[in-house]
Every structure is written in structure tokens, then in C-alpha cells.
Image (cartoon, rainbow, N blue to C red; front, side, top):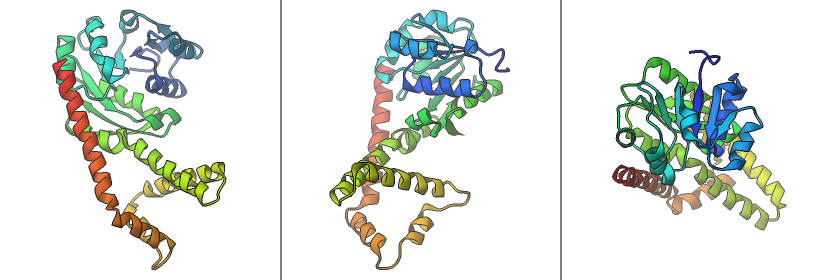
Length: 274
């Protein structure tokens, strides 16, 4: 399939859908190849300004589309699926909704369907996302390539071996940005208390996070080695890290991530029972 002949339909036109759509447009997709359905006029207007075909009618959006992207919030997903018209045999469904297992999606659709589950994160909005994908057995190689291209428009992409791995992905990268935002909030607040101007503290903390992440992503980089390299004996960094160690920082992070996994599994059970 070439981008000239593809038709991709989005159910939902919120932040995540817009980040994917804008990425596709920047990647060379023509606006006429993309449709989006959303009940919110403002959401449709934002995409219409870029030439994307918009509608409030899900059936009109998915008719004849090569791929249908479910990009709605988990709490409305079950209702959306109940109202979704029957998909054509072989029509690819790509779900970016957390907490909706493939088996439950198939049950809601009432028929076997090629399905790819994706777990992106919000930095995709600025082209710096991380995303993991999992496909059921009905997804063809061509469809896997399409799903990967869709997510690659704003994210680094990896495929996981089992659907259960997506719960770990949620804990690491799906919810992960919030962990770093919380750290940045604390660093900025403390920087201001120590005498910096708020904008100075925000710039310094944010750039430090970006720089550390950039170093950690270099080929062969080991975060532990990087930490040790910046920690001079009896220096300021060692003093700071000792406070984090006494607070059992690693165990706190592990507990937070396990809580995210537990909640993802609960959401999956709730969706399967809905």
C-alpha cells in the first residue's frame, strides 16, 4: 500500500489522534487520505483546518478505510464500540485505548478482526513519543508495516512479544511521562525556594531532564554508569543521591510502576465485563 491509495479513519479527534494525524501529514500523507470522526465541533475544526475530512458520523469515517484507529478515552470505548458499524472483513483496527484487550475488542465487534493494540504516550504530541505495539494473528505483514508507520510519525516504536507485555509498557512509558513531570515539579519548586526565578528553574530543570535522557539514549549507554560518572566522591551529587537512597527511591519507583500495572489489569477486567 502506498500513502497515495491508503485511507485511514480515526474514531476520536482528541490530543492523541491529532498528534498521530499531524505526524502522518508531516510524513507525506495527503489530507484526503485521512478522515476523523468526533462529536466535538472544536476537535473537528482543528483537523479541518489542515484539510482532513471530518465528520460526527463514525460510519461515514470508517466506510472503505484500510485502517480504523480507535483513539477514544477508555471510559467511553465500550459505548463507542457498541455503536460502531460492522467492520469489513480484513479491515485493520488499531486501538490506542488503554485497558482494552484484543479478546474483548473482538467480542465487542462480534467477529474476528485484524487488530493492533498500541500504547503510545503524550510526548508524541511534540514528536518525542515512545510507543509499543502488539498484533493478533490476523494482522498481515503489510498491516503491521502500516501500523508501525502510523506510530513512527511521532514516536520511537517497538513491538512486544505478548499482549501482556503492554501492561509493563504502560508502567514504563505510558504513565512514565507523569513520573518525570512530578520530578520536574519538585525540582522547579525547590529551585525557586533556593532563590531562582521560576522561569530559570523551569528552563534549567527541563533542559537537565532532556540532556540526561539524550545521554541515556546514546548507543551502548548505561544509566548506572552515567550516574556514577557524574557522582564525585563526597561531592554535591553524592550528597543528593544519599537522600534519595535513604528514602528508598528505587523501591518507591518500583511500587509506583507496579500500581500502574495493577490498575491496567483492573481496567482490562472491567472492560471485558462491560
